[in-house]
Image (cartoon, rainbow, N blue to C red; front, side, top):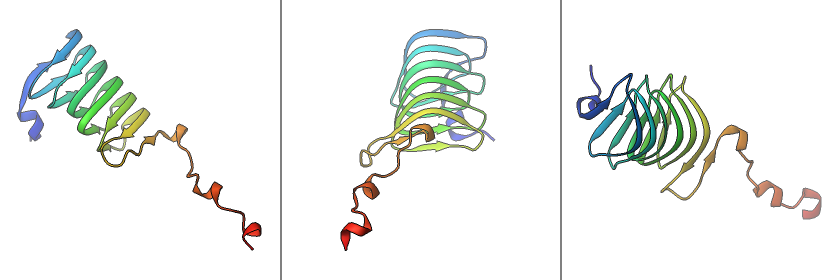
Length: 139
């Protein structure tokens, strides 16, 4: 059974095709070929299972199922599906990473309170404990 986003695909860049440049569109677009450049839309951009994308993506919703390297700015949400490999930076208010997906990079949670989440290698512990006076000084 096809997913809702698959029923509404307006354009498709299939396997064996290559595109370099800037692509802007309305509606849902899926790429299963090679894309290098920039993607701009307020709608949904799908990076298919056979895709290899090196780009700066600005979209409403981004769904990654293939290989992606670059920067994603998703106004609504970003989904990283099982079997995909995403390397780069994500800016989004909502992120979903399935078990079996690979994400190497940094995620900035936007729109909620300005907090940011970093990958495990760059994570920092809260600093509140460091500022509390030692128990011996409090007596």
